Length: 362
Ligand code: 5AD
Ligand code: FES
View 1: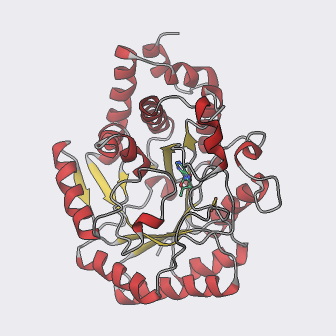
View 2 (view 1 turned 90 degrees about the vertical axis):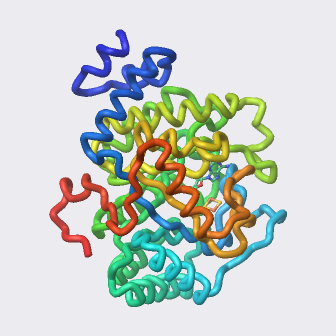
View 3 (view 1 turned 90 degrees about the horizontal axis):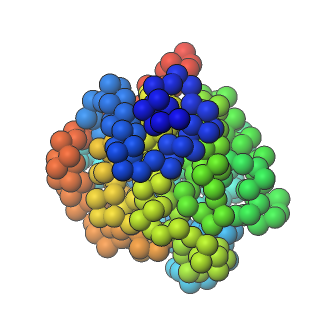
């Protein structure tokens, strides 16, 4: 079937999605134009900012692709003091960014749970309730997620990474810490509690097929997700998956594939928040802006103070040597080039969330 015909269909099948993932030349342009049109119908040229603080790279897990995995000894482990984190949050607030993401490696001890709740409360207090907080600190028990929600966090990001349970063990150790079912269960917990839930996958992993990627997109739709972040997989030489780099498609192709994935997702789920991920920028200087121009509507400027060079999930991560301020100013300029409009004070909640639930969000 021709791409125009596929784009005119109401419901896309797995085969349709695979055909779109294969699109090139004029067909690719048609796909991107349709995604842009839907993005504009739902969000105009608005781009929501979330200042992200990667406050610790200490992680109990050992994912085979990830640069901050437990077994990697080639990096300095850090855990920012609460005071530094709060200062960074204040920096965001003073610069008019009212939406914050706290991200770190996974830890599940009691002290960690209490600390996050404390930070959330402090940030809420400091901003008179004006800052909206998103957490991204891995798999946790239901009670812990609930505790943080009650403390004031209202959005949570937990990528499924690979949506097919049969493939999950290819990229993760085979032990009780890395179970697909547990990860999925966590996503259900988050939804049940009332969070706006974000997930995502990596694109271009070794052995991943277009069929797998189509399944990922159908998974997001079936799970009825509110927010999404997908990025190209980028090999890291201090990880086990690095030995399989000869199986990878070139970085440029991974970038285009990510653009296609975002575009198809926009068509499948018009009103969700889709983030232009930092990994895009690691491949192309303007990678994030190009993704925002087509399908994405969220960007996450990094305002982590210190230690940025130690949160290397993958190699060539951009902006690891700049101060937070440099990043925000530089972003505003970059968006202007694409006639995109930064939205910093609005929390920019996912419209989809309000349609799927009547639970009020603070
Ligand atoms: N390449 C790209 N993305 C990666 N992540 C972890 N390692 C890599 C890598 N090598 C992503 C994971 C994780 C997010 C914080 O970073 O999807 O959820
Ligand atoms: Fe930290 Fe995967 S290595 S969660």
